[in-house]
Length: 178
Image 1 (tube, helix red, strand yellow):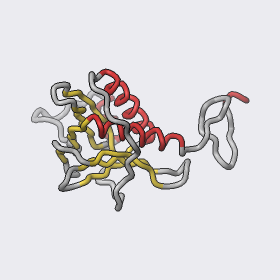
Image 2 (cartoon, one colour):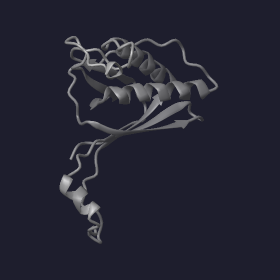
Image 3 (cartoon, helix red, strand yellow):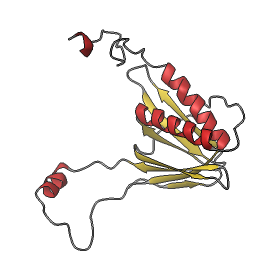
C-alpha cells in the first residue's frame, strides 16, 4: 500500500514532464518545508486541473499576483499514479483544497464477479484503499500551476490542422482524410 500525505501549508505545487513529445511522462509535485511528494499523472489530467483552477481563480474576489512557471524538483520519482483529483474551494482562507487519489488497478476477475451479480462479503469490501494527497493550495501557487501547465501544453507535438490529434514525427493517419 502506498503512503498518504497531507499538506496544510504548501510551499511547492507544480507539474512537469520528462521525455520527448509523444513519449513524455507527466508529474505533479506538492510539498511544504518538510517534504515534497511527486506523483505520476496523465497529460489530460494536468490540462483539466489547470482549466478548473483557472475557473476557480476567475470566481475569487481577489486576483493573484502575476505568476511564473515553477520547475519540478529533482529527483523526480513518483510515489504512485494518480486516479482521481477532487477540488474544493475554501473561500474564507482563499485556498484551493485538492484531494488527489491513487489509481488502484482493477482485477478483471472482480469485474466479472460484479457482472455476474455475485455478492460481496457481508463484512465489507476486500478492495484495497488507495493513497491520497490532501493539499491546501494558495491562490499564488494555483496561478503558477496554470502558467506551468500552459507552457507544458505548448511544448508537445503540434496538432493536426484537420482533426486536432497530435502529429507524430513518423507521420499521421488522419481520420478526416479517410
